[in-house]
Image (cartoon, rainbow, N blue to C red; front, side, top):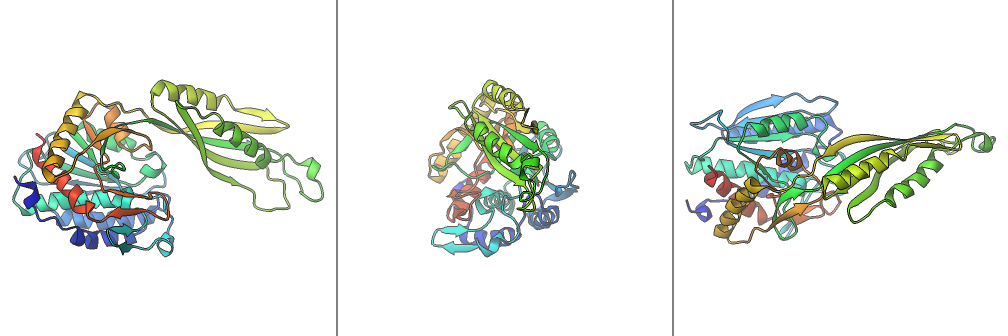
Length: 376
C-alpha cells in the first residue's frame, strides 16, 4: 500500500475539525462533554463504526466506544484511546476563537487532543474508502475525564486495553514531532486547612486563618521539588468575605517523578505534612495517581513499525519518555504495547495560545493509517 496515495487533505480535515473545537467541553461540565461525544459519535458512525454510548459517573460525562466491521470482529486488535475533555472553561472561545493564521490554527483543545482524535477518525475513514481492510480489528474509545487524572474511566480504559494487542494514543506530538514510549509517574493531592472564623475588623485576634497557614504550606510543598520528584500547586480556593477570617481553605497539588520509587517517596513526604499549627489543621489526602510507564520490548517493537511508516511518509519519528501523564500511563504500565503522542504537531496546550500546525493533520492521519494497515 502506498501511504502517500491516500487522499488526506489538511484543509478539508480542518473544516471537519472546526465543529469539534467550537463545541467546548471542559471536564467538569458533563453536559458539554456529552455534546462533544455526540459530535464524535456521528463522525465515527459516518466512518462505518458501530457506536456504543457508555453513561458517565462520578459527575463526569459519558464515553463513546466505536467498533469497526472486520472479519475478526471481537478478537484482540488495536485500541485507539483518546479523551475529548479539555481544560478550557465554556466561554474560552471568546478569547481563543477557532482561527487560522497561515499554517497555524488556534482553538481550545485543538492540540490537546481533539486534533489528534479527529485525525485518527479520518485515518479509519480513508482506509475504508480505499477498500483497505486492516489486519486487525479496530476499536476507538473516547473518554471524558483525562484532564483530571481519569478518575471515572480508568477501569474502562484498562479493561478495553486488555482485550487488544496494541494501544495507540493520539495525544499531541512531542516538540520535534516524535512519539512517546514511556511516561513518568504522577500523583495528585488534596490539601485542606481548617481554622476558626472571626470578624476580620472587629475581632481579628479571635480568628485562626486557614488561608495564612495554607500560604505557608504551599511554599513548603513547592520547596520539596528535586531533580527526581517535582511538586507544584495548581488550584486554591478559600474565602467569601474580605471582612471574615477564612476558616477553610482547599488546594490541589501535583507531583511527578521519572521512577516509581521516587514518586512513592514523594507521596510519603506529602502525607507526612499533615499537622496542626496555632489551632489550624493542615491535612493532605491522596488523589488519583498515574503509574510509571517504562517502555518494554512490545512497545519498542510497536514504535519501530511507527518509525518505518513515518519514513515512508517522509519524516523521522523519534521517541522518548515524557511527563505530563496520559491514559497511556495505564495501558503501558499493564504491559500492553502502547504508542503515545502520535497526534498533531503544535504548541501552547492548556493556554490561550493553543494551536496546531495545520499540515500536520494530514501527516498524522497518514501515520495512523499506516499503523492500522501494518500492525498484525
